[in-house]
Amino acid sequence: MPDVAILGISGSLRAGSFNSALLRAAAELAPAAGITIEIASIRGIPLYDGDVEANHGMPPEVTALKDRIAASAGLLLVTPEYNNSIPGVMKNAIDWLSRPSKDIPRVFGERKVGLIGATIGPGGTALAQAAWLPVLRTLGVLPYFGARVGLREAAKSFDEDGKLIDPIARGLIEKFLTGFAAFVKR
Image (cartoon, rainbow, N blue to C red):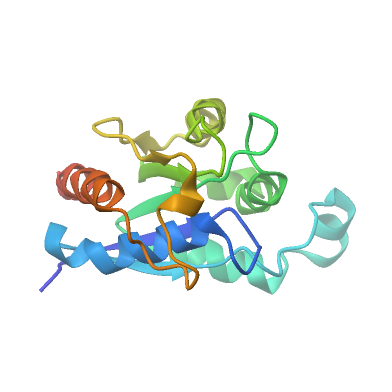
């Protein structure tokens, strides 16, 4: 039975998102690596507004997600790549999750983080994953660099129901999860 709980978050809100499908595939494959991946969502997190924070405090969706991250052994971020960079909705969620700044150590400090992604283009989210590094450094997390998953031309890796059908992609995810699990357990 898996003994380490990872929280996975897709950076896409689209119902047919390949990144959400990638996260579901990772969650299905995780037990073989000795972990479980619990899926969380950024849906419902409003655009960051300092006035909202000052006048009304944290939105309940943010507080709940912060608590789930803080309770996890690790965090798996599944990032789309938009215009060769990070998706705005995911960055917005991180901006909320890092407020107030005194909460950063509780939520993110030295948390083990894996980063994977899928795109319909040929780049395989390499640029988005690189663009996340300064953000992750600022949050004080410990990123996993032992393997990469950046699915390119993702429409070929999933069927019309969002199920992973590409055996090469499956192998990449399994390799990533095995290494990430060992990294989190250290």
